[in-house]
Amino acid sequence: MSIQILSIIGLVLIFALATVRSVNMGAVAFLGAFLLGTFVFQKSGDDLFSGFPGDLFVTLVGVTLLFAIAKANGTVDWLIHAGVRAVRGRIALFPWVMFLITSLLTMVGAVVPGAVAMMAPVGLNFATRYRINPLLMGLLIINGASAGGFSPISIFGSITNGVVERSGLPGNPVMLWISSLLFNTLLSVVVFFMFGGKKLLGRRVTTDPAQQDEDADEPGGGGGATTATRTSTAVATEVTTLNAQRIVTLVGLVALAVGALALEFDVGLLALSIATIIILLWPEVTRKCVSEVAWPTVLLVCGVVTYVSLMESVGTIDYLGNSVAGIGVPLLAAFVICLIGGGVSAFASTTGILGALIPLAVPFLLTGQVGSVGLIIALAISASVVDSSPFSTSGALVIASTPEEARDTTFKRLMAWGMSMIVIAPVLSCAIFVLPGWL
Image 1 (cartoon, rainbow, N blue to C red):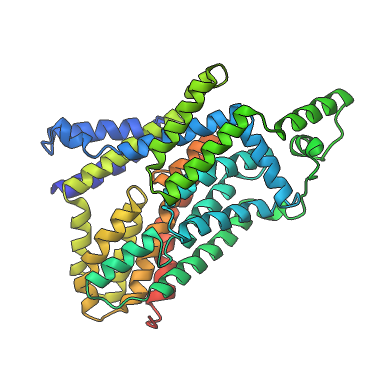
Image 2: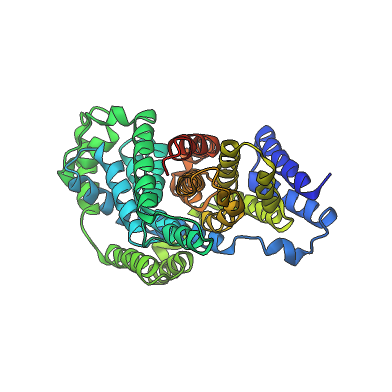
């Protein structure tokens, strides 16, 4: 049995054991990486740790720590109230506002994980406050990032178009961008109605700050006792005012946005640095926030990504890609390429997959059996839509930003959605962009 097949069997066993025994999948993945890597693949400890996603670890820790601080000192509450006023109390609009802002950020060049890191904590806190399904909010943020992610000046778009040009293939950057934008928008409409959006259409909350907490906490929008009302009003008034801590935290969030999106600083290191400065200034308020970092999510994601990196190092991904060449049916080969792109990208870097799989498909595309532009669009969509997987950076950020009491449920549902997209996205994208033969 080849080591590539063995590594795939190992991944299946990791999923099975973690599911049956209800344990953290990341811990099982580290076990699998150690046993297979050391005793079967003859890898050293340094080889195994070379696949550890240090940047993702710092991003998850830094972002969740910073927003734990923002939540503890009332800054998140202030932002939520500002969001309610911006949409004039129409709860159903807020997920779409998050979709639009995230897509605009990636459209002008922000990296997808950086944009999601900025938007997910605020969006998920809003969802918790106003009883919006966290899966609905998280998916619209992730889809928004993918919707704008293939513009000609974006990161994904630049990588894809650059690889196409270097490979000597015909390309259409504008068509790639518009196709991704429309696909993700339509997918988000489906998400909206699948996960409770219809129930939000008739819901409104008052834009009066003194009443917002009552609207959020009472299903009927009020009716509490006089004491409770006074308490709610006092809390609401307090969180809609700015004190020194909230001002500094807001400045830190703006610095994170500018530094990560415009100056291209590492989002994790920058978020962790800003959080540490706030901790040093107000240790009495922020001391307990370190324990609120989403450590189980960090373990889960880092473990699985480390194992997938081991699979890449033994040639499993190349093995899967090269196997496509032996398929004699062009449309089936195109679907398999997209399926591989989606499957691998769900556990690894979408950026890396876009740069690796297009060259692998070049010999097949040069035969002219399918349209190059159509297949490239289908591959780009297949590899990016699965960013909703909780094992990708974007999905992990959504899980980490979900309140602890809803985190396990959201993880399971997001995993089901992300895994289904591995198949659904290639089927739909190939049917739309490859099968008709018009691109």
